[in-house]
Image (cartoon, rainbow, N blue to C red):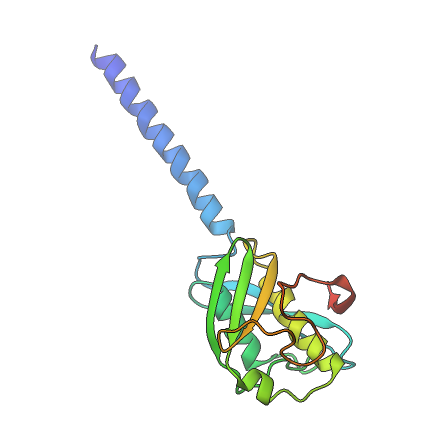
Length: 170
């Protein structure tokens, strides 16, 4: 009787260790919710025709908000160019149903230098960077909490936007 109880206890401990090991490997491979992970942020190339990825190591938990705040800071690589005005404030960011609702302050519009190419780079830098996260497939832009037909004058921002390979260098 004692032998069966001992083997049953060993089997339970082994099963728990197996589950723990699988869980730990899942956590270690997850790009979200872990400390000190590298993210891919997209900034404009010199010509303003495509956004190009820049890997950046971030401390703490990686969130969509943190990604957008890093985009506002601008690129670290000298061959890339910022897409968001540095005075831009992220008011809120909500992910629901694989759509990221990104609410910017008025400065994103007021301090935008203008032009169709710059607008494309701004929009697709945010979209490409956020859709690197597995739970985000599209981005809905908001200005001061409101959906606008076109925040910057050229691109329809009244609907969620998805990545467009034409503007994203992968």
